[in-house]
Length: 112
Image (cartoon, rainbow, N blue to C red; front, side):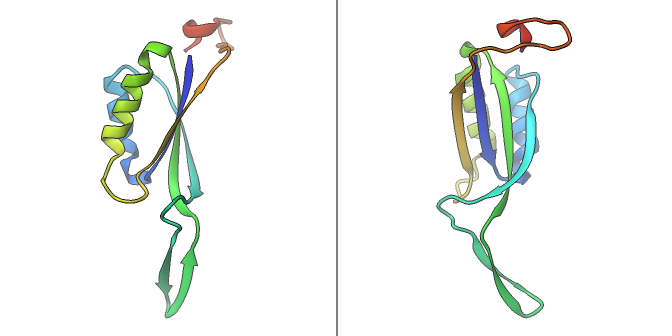
């Protein structure tokens, strides 16, 4: 089992959710986060005053998938989230040692 974590632009969230549903991902956790990478934020003008926006709004998606679904999930996220501009995001894949569904007590892939 793997945990796929994607940091994407918030307006691409619905597209990514639909793409993941099409490949068979049944659940996900979404968190509104702020951060920056190479884009380093930007400056904005508000009521005549210029200020720096260091942390940009992003959406963090976390999905737990079986090992054989990882590549499909990554491809779905990449295709749906890509705009071709700086700040499209990142995808991280980490191993899950164990998963347990609290309601039924199922372990491993059955818990997903």
